[in-house]
Image 1 (tube, rainbow over the protein chains, first blue to last red):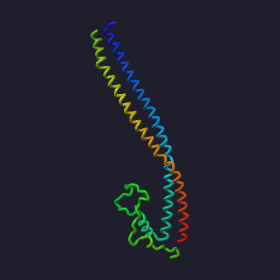
Image 2: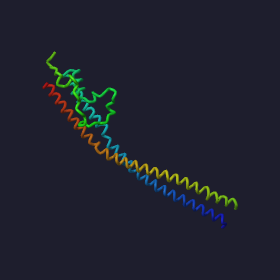
Image 3: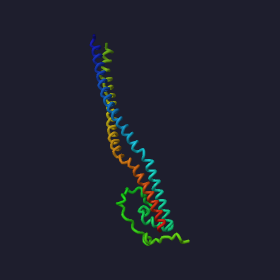
Image 4: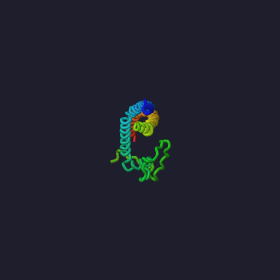
Length: 137
Length: 82
């Protein structure tokens, strides 16, 4: 066998060994990727199942609170009249007193205990509102 | 014979380094994918922990419903009292 043939065989063996080494390493890394993907898919499934009732629950809460607000607003308007009811609501609602150019949604969320008591509107505080008598014409 | 030697030199000097370079690129990309996936898995695990209280929304809904009923009765009573 000539020297050239021997060199060719040795070079081919070296190339094959290098290829095999890299491919084995890549396969090991991809196996790790596969395992991690399994964990990610499991976590995503858990997230999906945990957030599944959010839509219906929030819509239900929203509907219940809207019903309560409408009922209380109707009662208030019935007792003190629409204008006085609006003033009363404005005097106790901190969001209603915010300047119009400010977007209340951009404010950081404040816990109810953090909200300072609303200052009374001069001359329009709640005790000054006279209840309307249902017997009045 | 001269051509054979030229082929050997090309194999050792050109083809083998190119193969190593390309394989190293694939290996590096696979390692980057694995690192990114590890980060995603870590964040996903934290998100699952953060979502634990979400199931309590159903209980909150029940409480709000009961509160709304109570408010209705309270409003009706106020309507009669005032």
